[in-house]
Length: 474
Image (cartoon, rainbow, N blue to C red; front, side, top):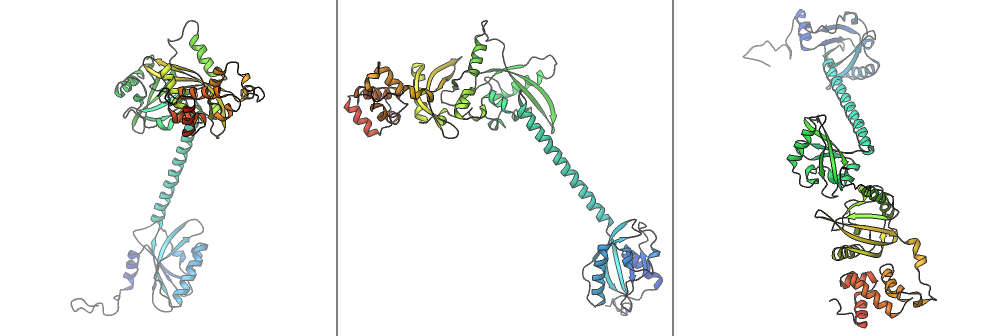
């Protein structure tokens, strides 16, 4: 290599350097430099003068370099040094961990360079302690982060368990958006919806005649005074009057309202305790009681109904259609709703209910239409008649004579058995009554009547024509 005709570099790839300058140049080009003999003995140690963290290493000279390496680094060095002595170029740096009297350790990345004669080698090293310290800091930060995540998961688990088992109905609402952040099952039941459907819903929309901004402002005002009165509201779905007692706190940079919901027991309780007795009857009666909206969506049930359909919690059935638990589904529901709307009530309707496992139970239902300040709902009383069926069964030997009042008995039997089973024990008169009753219950819906009687549409039309009922009620 030449520059401008100069022969300064022509003596070799590296110019001749005076010995007194060579060590300072090597020290400046590396953090630590070792000159090793072919036997691995350290001939010289050169340190960067600007870095005094290595201390005095003069005692290394004249001793094997393996005396100052950790056990795993000794193996790595011997393999690399043997390859160097055999003439193999070391293209990759070698990372070794030094030790000195077992008091401290530090990692160094070395590169091999041929130096002089007799297989001496120059090791130019870079101190890896800053990198190791940075890696250690990253590891510690990662451990701290994982510990934080673990603590958060533990806190979240405790919060979920407490929220699920606390007796109070609790809802967390964001004051900024007015939406529900979290809710427990007790509150979901009180609000007439499933908890997963409530997450993210606007809190104010769950109550009648309350705007989001107005309700949020009322709740915040209620938190400013120790003697503030609870905020009274009416739930839209269940039509129940409740009280909200809010507590405000800050989390994640925003204010959150923790609202505890209580049933409003002020007013509406008659002096003779009728309301209290009705509530106790609803809970303790052996008959299933169901309240649903005019479309058949379940608003509330008692424990007897949960037992009948195999539900573990109210939230398992609230919000679902009653048709999901009826053997004939929408047909049965349509008969109940149509008669309740037309006549205000339905005294007795026999059908079968299906529980969560698919088992069917024979039941009798009575329905009544309820109106409370313009809000319409339908109440049902459901009685399990499985144990009564053997008593009600008609002995074959008695035939039609067992029916002291054929008209009344036929009406009770419709829906609990197929038409063939009823007719087998009765006369053509009873068959006619069954068909008339089914047509009346379904409001002349021939498809629903055929389904109720277990007939095809064609067979139903044949029998309608036989008894002169084809155009009746049409």
